[in-house]
Length: 189
Image (cartoon, rainbow, N blue to C red; front, side, top):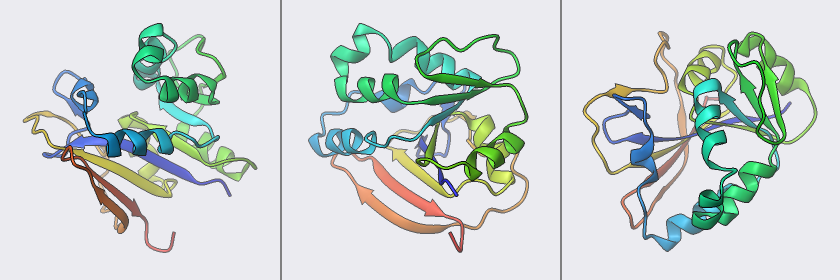
């Protein structure tokens, strides 16, 4: 069975988007060679990237641009080359390279996708999708980067989760920039 991983940034007060729905605070220019090497290494996977509509549109408006290639060529190359899945009931088409548009129920569709052969999948951003798949027990690993910023208001990636999710810490790493990487898995995973 394919593994499904979430990779998201959160603020110190637990938000993954600010009160305006922005994640710009997570892209602050980090002059931390160790962090930058970690990011470059982390994007080497070959499996599909999974998005909800909002995150997909944000990513599709940036990564195929010359600005993305100039600022972060390694990540831009991976983002543009990777197979992508976007869950949306409102999009009519998904024009970013290698993207499959899925209009069906994310939980039912992800159950099917996890049974297929192939590389693991990674959800980026996409809090609505994360909360739906978390409630259904379909996420195998939560990779969270805690950024040294307090937003005061925003939305968590678990909005809508009403049952407790017990998780175990499987990995942690602190970076000179103050960012902290934490990886959690459900018990038994």
